[in-house]
Image (cartoon, rainbow, N blue to C red; front, side, top):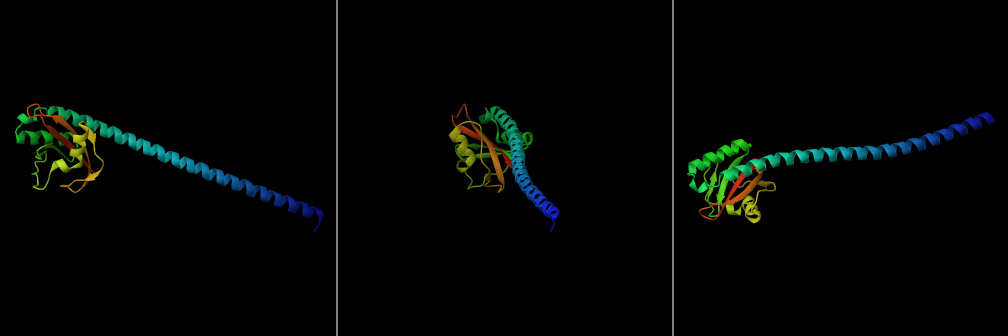
Length: 175
């Protein structure tokens, strides 16, 4: 092999080696940056979705709270009037159902559903949460005992002026 051929071979091998090293470093850097960009995009999408859900829930909570204030004189309403008021609330909020549960275990649904014998609202998560906090709240996702669908409930309480016991009200949002 001539001297010229040896020099060309050595230069070619050096170029191949340096190009390979450069390609490997570029690949690793691109992979790292791509991973960071994907994670950032997913975090931004997640935050955007969270903000949207928070906004949606806050409007539902405000409307539910307004409705609760309108039930201050619920003692004076007939069962039919209460059912009508709850039904209107359900439509206004786009909820699955609206209802009022009493401390004696009685329930009135906006859908005019009859309370099953074994159903006690005082054992439900929304009732317990509302009673413990004493203010407007939202439950975690749970399976409804009568509807058997996943739902969340916006709940709250208010004191009856005449009877001095709490009344609990809800809005179901089914998935």
